[in-house]
Every structure is written in structure tokens, then in C-alpha cells.
Amino acid sequence: MIHATLHQLKVFEATARHGSFTRAAEELYLTQPTVSIQVKQLTKAVGLPLFEQIGKRLYLTQAGQKLLETCQQIFEGLDQFEMSVADIKGMKQGQLRLAVITTAKYFTPRLLGPFCQRFPGIDISLKVTNHQHIQERMANNEDDLYIISSPPEQPDLKIHPFLENPLVVIGPKNHPLVDKSNISIQALNGEPFIMREPGSGTRQAVQKLFSKHKVDVKVRLELGSNEAIKQAIAGGLGISVLSLHTIISEGTKGEFAILDIEHFPIERHWYVANLAGKQLSVVAETFLQYLLEESHDLADKFLPGIKRPSSPQPNGHRPEALLTTAGGASLQD
Image 1 (spheres, rainbow, N blue to C red):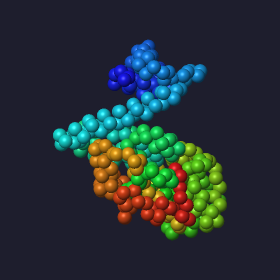
Image 2: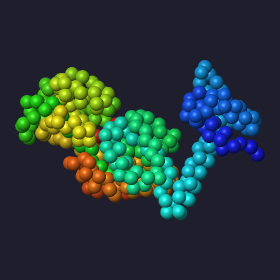
Image 3: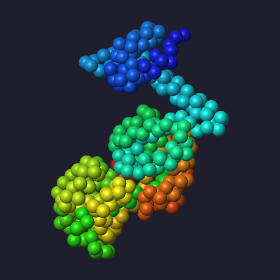
Image 4: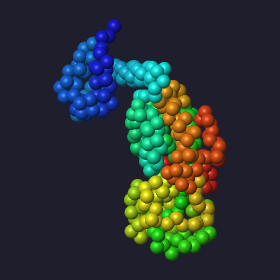
């Protein structure tokens, strides 16, 4: 039987995750020699090498990979036990690990605020990242819940729509089209346009719609962030298509104007997802129900004009109407 302490397993898990003694030491507030010693003692107890070093990075051996999987199961089990005990005691406490797509950062804190006030014993670990990294985190089972704008085609996910995410045409407030209504989409032909980077879900939605209606804008800039696009719009470099959340939630509405263009807004939605085979903790289940039941009320308060999908589907069923945008294209973020 292998004799190892819980502390040694935590040190090993952090080292394996970072591939570095130094970074593991920084995370755990230990010295680098202490981390090295703990890993050496654990290696001796196992009787097989756990790491091999190539250059400056540590890589797991076969035994190390098996031990890492075991550690993750142990830590998840302990978290579940702690939360179950808290639930038995009538308390909601523990940690919620939440990963959200970059654009969701505009409204997620506003949803988290009332939740944390209601359940002060819950700590939130919030990771903001792009679509690709969200999928990697899903594959590695790193989080409890994910907020995404377009569900990946993975059968092992439960996906719940909970909030609308309309894409609108935004221009500087002095744009010639600002005071007009029911503008034909053809009026955008030749307009200086600021486009999201290739691979962006917003870009795909816009290009699909423009292609359908034979609209040819003049792409002046390609930018990889909504913040940069908004600055370019404010500077008079052109118009763009962005999520309505990006201007409502930041209080910068006065710098921009929403143009009343035909076929806009493009309807998209926000989804909360979790791994189908994973048992949600008491804390994660509490937050999931909070989103599904109360997000529309919070949206009315913090994000006027944004609504929840009219028929949210529990148990991960995804209505086709919610998974498509203009032209029926399934999107990546």
C-alpha cells in the first residue's frame, strides 16, 4: 500500500498541472525546494518515476498520469463531501468553478453579485477565456459550469439556454445613419467596417448574413477584441456588429449608436453547460438553478432590453431555433 499524505498529493497535482516546481510553489505559497522534496518523497512511496524533465519543463510519466487522475478523483470526492455536509447543515458553502467565454465577462459579474450576496459562504473561481480554451477545459474537466455563446457539438454536454445575446450594428453617435429607421441592409454596401478576427462566431454570423443579402462592406480593420472594436468605432474608423451586452453593461452607451438596419439584430443566445457524466456539486446545482430561474429578472434590472429565451429547455435539450442564426449557421465563438 502506498503511503502518501494529502499535502503531498496537492503538491504533486499542482506540479503536474503547471509542469514546473517553481510555478507550483508560487500557487501553493511554498518554496521551490519544499515542493521538490514533497514530490521526491511521493515518488519514493510510489516506487516509480512520476515526472521526466525535458528542458525546463516537467512531463508526466505513465505512472504520473495515473496518479494525477487519482488525485483529481480524490479532490473532487472531498469537495463533494464537504459540500454535502454543508447542505445537510442547511448551509450553501464551498467553491464554484465557473469558466466563461470572453464576451460573457460583460454581464457575468452582474449575475454573480446577487448570487454571492445570497450565499456568502460560496467562493467563486471565475476563468474568462476564448472558445478553444473553453473546450480544452471541458476536456480536462476543470470546471463545474461553463457559460458559452455557441454550444460545441459534443454529445457529453448538458446545455441550457438562459439569456438572449442579440448582435446589433453599432456606429459612432454622429454617423449619418443614426437618425434613420428601417434602413435597408443594402445601405451598408461600401461602409467602412471593423470586423472581428477569423474564427470569431460574430464574424461568421455577420459574413453569413452579408453573403445571403449580397452586402459588400469595406473592411478597414480586423480586431480580436470587443474593446478594441469599440475604441475604433468611437474614433470614427467605421461601424461594426457587436453583442448588445458589450455596450449596455459597460455604461458607455453614450459613445455609440445602434443603427436600425434591416435583418438585425442577429439572434443568438447564452448557454450554461456542464459535463453530462459529472455529478454537480450542491453549489454548482444551486448556481445552475439560479441562472435558469432568475436570469431574466436580473437581465431586466441590469441589462434592459435583453431577454431570456422564451422556452428554455431543461435537461440539456437544444431547440434548433436557438442553435442557429441568420441563414441557419451553427456558430463557434
